[in-house]
Amino acid sequence: MTFQGQTALITGAGRGLGRALAVALAARGATVIGVARTAAELDAVVAGIRASGGDAHAIVADLHDPEAPARVAAQAAALTGAVDLLIHNASTLGPTPLPLLLDTWPEDFERVLAVNLLAPFRLTRALLGGMALRGQGAVVFISSDAAVEAYPTWGAYGVSKAALDHLARTFAAEHADGPLRFLAVDPGEMNTAMHAAAIPDADPASLQDPADVARRVLALLASEAPAPVRRLAQEVTP
Ligand SMILES: NC(=O)c1ccc[n+]([C@@H]2O[C@H](COP(=O)([O-])OP(=O)(O)OC[C@H]3O[C@@H](n4cnc5c(N)ncnc54)[C@H](OP(=O)(O)O)[C@@H]3O)[C@@H](O)[C@H]2O)c1
Picture (cartoon, helix red, strand yellow):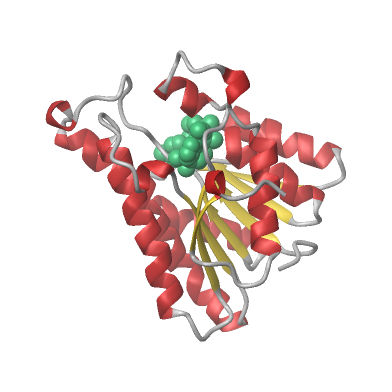
C-alpha cells in the first residue's frame, strides 16, 4: 500500500501514537483526518501538518457516544470523500490508578469496552461498505500486549484489546479473498500520556518514541499482506 493521495482517518490523533501516525502519513502524501475529544490538541496537529505543506482536518468527537462513529463517518465524507485507511488508535485505560477486577465498577468496565471495542466496530461498519464498493481499503486496530498477557489491574483494558485483536482476525477471515486489509498491531511501550497515567514511575528513556513506532506501523502496512495480528515489540526493528 502506498499512502500518496490516500485519505487516512485516525482516531486519537491529538497526541501520542495517533499524532505520530497523522504526521507520518501526511509526510507521505496522505490526506489526514484526525478524531479526538480535545479540539486544541487536534487543531495543533492539523496546523503543524498544514505548515509542512500537508493536508489535514480535525473532527472533534467523543467515541464513547454510540452515535459518534456514524457522525464521524458522515463528516469525513463531507470533508474529503472516501476514506482509504482507517486507524483505530483512540483508547482509554479506564480510571487510574488501575484497579483490580474485583474493585472495577461495571460502569467503568463498560466505558472501556465502549471506547476501545464498540466504537472501532461501529466506525468500521460505517466506512467498510464504501471501501468494499471501491475495492480498496485498510483498517488498523491499535492493540496492546495486554491483549495476550493477563496483567493484574489491567483487566478491562486487556479484555477490550483481546477482543479488538479478534475483531481484526475475524474481519480478515471474512474478507480473505478480497482487496480489503485488516491489521491489529501491538505497538509496544511508548513514551505517551497514556503510559504515564498507567505507570507513572516508568523511566521515559526506556520507552519507545511514538514517531518510531508510527514509522514501523506504516512499514508493516506498506508490506505485502501482513498477518492480521502483529506484535511490534517481538519483531526485529528495521
Ligand atoms: N503508550 C503505550 O505504551 C501503549 C502500549 C500499548 C498499546 N498502546 C495503545 O496505543 C494507542 C495510542 O496510545 P497512546 O499512548 O498514544 O495514548 P494517548 O497519548 O493517551 O492518546 C490517546 C488519544 O486517544 C484519544 N481519545 C481517548 N479517548 C477518546 C474518546 N472517548 N473519544 C475520542 N478520542 C479519544 C485522546 O484524545 P482526547 O483525550 O482528546 O479524546 C488521544 O488523542 C492506544 O490504542 C493504546 O491502547 C499504547
